[in-house]
Image (cartoon, rainbow, N blue to C red; front, top):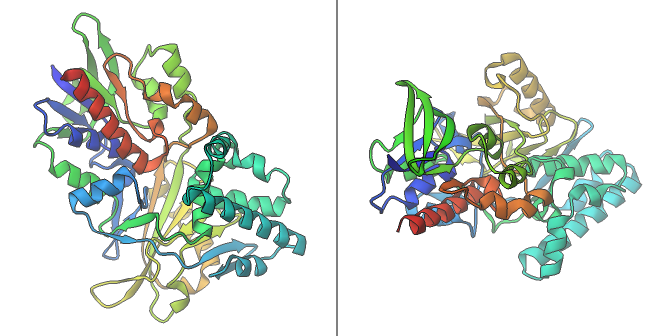
Length: 439
């Protein structure tokens, strides 16, 4: 019987094993895919690492602590511009008022959008400056973005909805106002102090964690198909399938480091309170398109940072390295990621040349001068992107984190935030919990 079996070799799973590495515990990590990292996948395009899932390291989080601890190179995300593509026209500017002024909107619509932007920025500055009171934070956590924009003109509401989906995956009806601030207003503010870009890609973090784990403790291409309680032995049986066929493993402790919606299907007979908490977790799908282009002679693209793309199958285009990247051949490369959060999960998208070509045509509608300049394209679709921080999930958080016997739950779905920064924080919490129980 193993001491600990961790189901899932993504951010939460690898980091949980990492935080247990200095114990004498027998820890095994089971990863269904061919490589570690999960939604932190990085691909090589035109000789540069491109993130097809998680994009940034957030300052002041467990992720930032890990990249420093592991010696992973980062550069700050330094946006200077914001852009909106609307009705066939792309407007990119350094000042929000210039972006609004250039849009194909009525004057009343421009006024309304401008006021909403200013109100959002004022609230964001108070939040990051520590001015926001505890009562206001509670209000922001319990209020959805949809409530805030319900009375706006349809055209203005569509722009804001698209911007929020592009930055935060979810629909405004499911997102708390507090959560949306970080992923919506921070881009409007050209925030330069809260995001870092890992030079070798986000997957460099779990791969570095793997190098610190005992050889043979992580098993890829090994899918857990069920977890059941062993009444007589005080542990759990984990059924797995992989290259070696079907197996039955046992462990004193099991950590479920998989997307929240997967948990109930893996563990039959969870208590009602846990099932009710898991039902509050929304982890919608998302599709991304990574593009690398040569922008020599096209300086207007160097400072692109975040472009809202209204009415397209992707909601936003993000450039994680404004200013461009110089490659070994001296070319100035632009790396862009199109986030199709409203498109959700599109099975087979990565291998569907026709659909990818359609997305590329939409991309060229946003950036027509890049036609003929693209050096590499990668399409990726995720069934569960990351757990939305909705008011419902925030209220259910204590029960999401609470173990069932020696069955533990770790991931962005159990975190106070979301994404990889939430997953890495949860890994440390669960590792400490196991240490305490086995001490």
